[in-house]
Length: 431
Image (cartoon, rainbow, N blue to C red; front, top):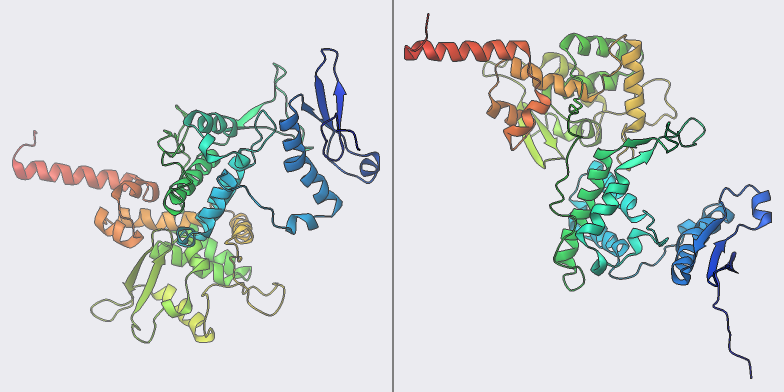
């Protein structure tokens, strides 16, 4: 008969050591052959809690080691998540119809945020994502949020920058941390409806009182381009062969479209279709709103002559698909690929826009979004009402307008003149 086992089993590459105080300590150690072959993982003490040590080794360290050993092939094997855990909640959210109704940019932001929260390592060595939802409390969520709010500053070699007090220098990433909490909050609410028997009805991510910025700091505004800067940008873009970007910049200015829509949703069929040849359909994926803009006035005069001439030329040689594609001569391949990638990425476009901005000698802080904000500000300078601005930008609330239509000197003068004119009518203006 085999004698009973007296020692608890240990995961691979883990060992135990008896300390002087009589307790067992556990360690994860990378084998020598792996170090010699360039494995970047480090040896790690796992503490004296056996269950926590095993969990840390099996859920975090060993999968990372196997990923290195297989050159990423093990990452392709779907891993099962425990029902009722936060990881499981994320999978419920992403399989729900509500996820498909979210635009691609927000999906990407949600996914990054939920991953940030789920991969946070707790004091016991476990991931926050592996924790059961029934164990979540408001205090627990607030504590994790406080940890995610700051991240160490690293130098060019990836090493933490140390302060005079000997502690790592931290930088705040409030916007990213807030977005993570908002994604988790949304996932919890969807889970409450989809799996009401498992997901607790109290959402610990709700009503966290998130602040958009630290007290005393100014809000970072998107730089607004002027008309002259738009003209200079377009001229340089055409000179460099980026005709599609030149036309897209004017489109964002005239029709107040976001870059995700201009490059990811503006289809050829939206511009002067057979059933409505005198209009263009402007769709705003973020708000789900769409508007048909007239292209001619009552007398038949074109409202956007420069833009229409360029779009007519594109439509004449484009049968279907997105309006704006990579049409520059030095592109790779003969097929005109979209500027936006399948995952909604615009990194290549943004770097190209930055190159054009610098080549044109414009302000370095300008971006493609600056042209949309410039269109809003031009509309406000032209005495558009809030209702007209909301209709053009498809905003449901006037509270968002100051973000886009910057307050300029002309607006302030116009507002003051209107106020004084109203006082004169009432006979209440003192001379």
